[in-house]
Length: 97
Image 1 (cartoon, rainbow, N blue to C red):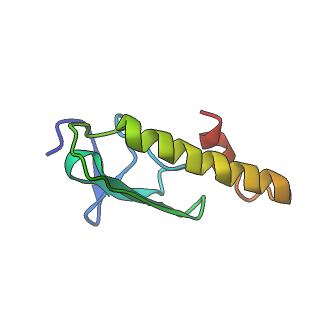
Image 2 (cartoon, one colour; image 1 turned 90 degrees about the vertical axis):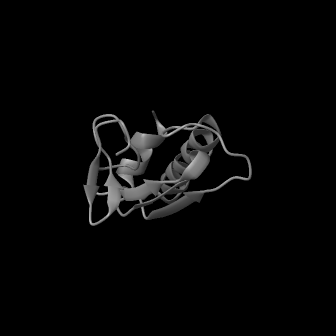
Image 3 (tube, rainbow, N blue to C red; image 1 turned 60 degrees about the horizontal axis):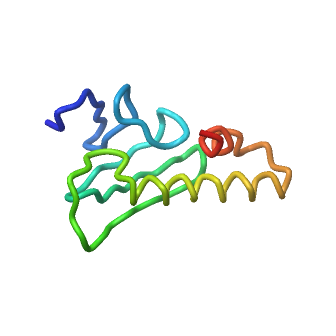
């Protein structure tokens, strides 16, 4: 369907070997037309959606979207570090990538 190995569950895309997002395999979401992308990451307590007004041809890791997603995880990791919370360890691991 997407032209790359991917996993679906209950109609949502799940992280897989070639399409990875979120901090764990529990994340779920969906790519959209022209580079839009939305997902939920239950482990990091994040709901994320990116939509734009100029279509492009990226199925995954659109440079416009990926930079914003990385910034969100980085911000979550900094907040967790400030509060001393160890509960968001997965967010820190993703932010370090």
